[in-house]
Amino acid sequence: MSALTRGERLQIMLTPAELAALDDWRFTKRMPSRASAVRELLNRGLQADGFALASSETKSKDYGIVPDTMSTGRKRPKKS
Picture 1 (cartoon, one colour):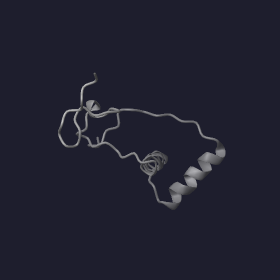
Picture 2 (cartoon, helix red, strand yellow):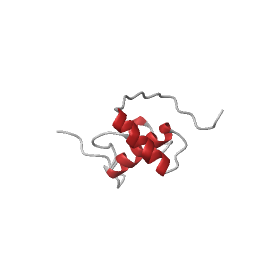
Picture 3 (cartoon, rainbow, N blue to C red):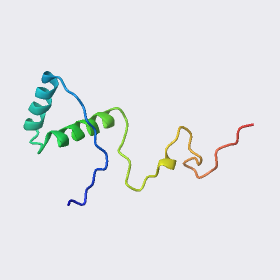
């Protein structure tokens, strides 16, 4: 078994035109599988929209709208 494990399965439905476009892109980029092509396109789309992939050391508590600690290390002010 590979060291890389993917614990979640995502199933999507595509139109024939979408599947043809995916396969054309995949073969042009010499991607090994449709799944790898979809992962690459998803990654590119997220990055283009300003999202980066989380590192493996990032925990869910590290995500939020307003962080508990500012980048300077100071605690955020408490609400009055």
